[in-house]
Length: 312
Image (cartoon, rainbow, N blue to C red; front, side, top):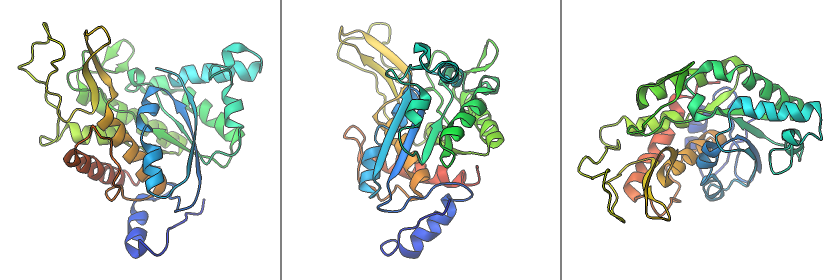
C-alpha cells in the first residue's frame, strides 16, 4: 500500500521519522486521511485503544473503530464463534458480538486495519495460537482482502501478580519477566509466520517495568491483610489497575488489566505504529497521569516502536 506523508509543517524531520517506523508494511496515514480500524480482541484491546481516539484527533487523523471484543476471549474462542456462523449464518453461537457474527461486522464497509491478539493467560504458549491465528487471518482476508492485519503484543501482568501466563500445557510463567519473554517470543513467531506487523505494547510495558527509574515497586509498608478503607498502598508508576476498593469497601486486586497510565501507553504505541508519527509532541494525557510520567510513556512508546521497526 502506498504510504501517504504529511507535507509542510513537519517537512524533512517527519519524513526521516517515518522512514524509521514505517519500514516494510507498517502504516503511515497522513493528516486528513480517515482510518477505519477493526479490533478482534478482548479487554486488553479495549485497554490499549481507550485513548486512541483522543490521540488520533489531536494528531489530525479521523478514526473509526469497529469492535468484536469479548472479555478474556482467546484466538480459539473467536475462531469457534466465527466457524459456527460460517457453517450456519443463523446459529446463535456464531452471533456472539451483540447479535452479529464476525463476518457481518467485517462486512460493514471497508476496513483499513484489522487487529488480532491472544488472550493474556494463553499468550506465553505458542501452541494455543495455532491454528486459530491463521484461520482468523484467512477469514479476514477473504472478507477484506486489502485490509492490513496487525497483531497486538499484549503485556505481562504486574510484578506482584499471584499467577502469570501459561507457557506450556499446565505450566505457567514464574514471574512477570518470564511472562514477557515467553509471550513476546510467541507473538513474534506467529507474526513472522503470517507475515504481519505487531503493536509492541508488551515491550513498552516491560521497558517501563524493568527500568529502575520508572518501575513499579510493591509497597512493603502497607498492611495488605488488614486494609483500612480508604487507604491504599503506594502504587506509583504502576501500569496496571492493582489494588482498589469495590463498592462494598472491600480491597480488590487486579494485576492484569491496564490502569489509566497503561491504557495511555497502549494508545501511544498504537498511534505511533498506525500513523508513523512520534507521540512525544502530543499534548493529550489522562488527568490521572502526571506530566512527568506522561513524558516517560510518550518517549517509551516512540523508542519501542523504533526498535521494532523491522518486525513485519
